[in-house]
Length: 133
Picture 1 (cartoon, rainbow, N blue to C red):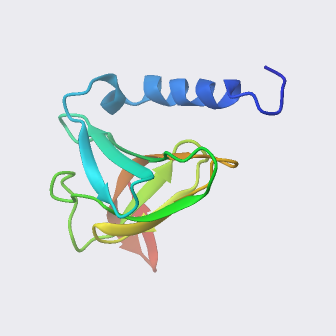
Picture 2 (cartoon, one colour):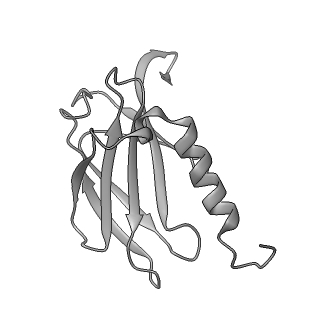
């Protein structure tokens, strides 16, 4: 567990994310989305009330950094085609603002081979600052 190549911390974080997100408690809403690289897989899960939408992007290549343009089905996720939305990476706490269905990802197996995003809708904009829920 104390080894530098141990996955224990990562697995612990993934299990915590699974426990804290209702969308990850069942498979009824599992949907796969398109990526232009077959070494990248992307899927989503959501709750009935759409309050918890999770998008997972994984690099399937254990040796090389892989990148892709991914296409989310915004209609399926009940997101407005014209409005920006925030992708909050629950593994790193990084936040990205995406627009439209097609966005770029790059994942390195040496750093972190996946994103587990919680999708947040833009609720308002004040003085040039966007607020997401």
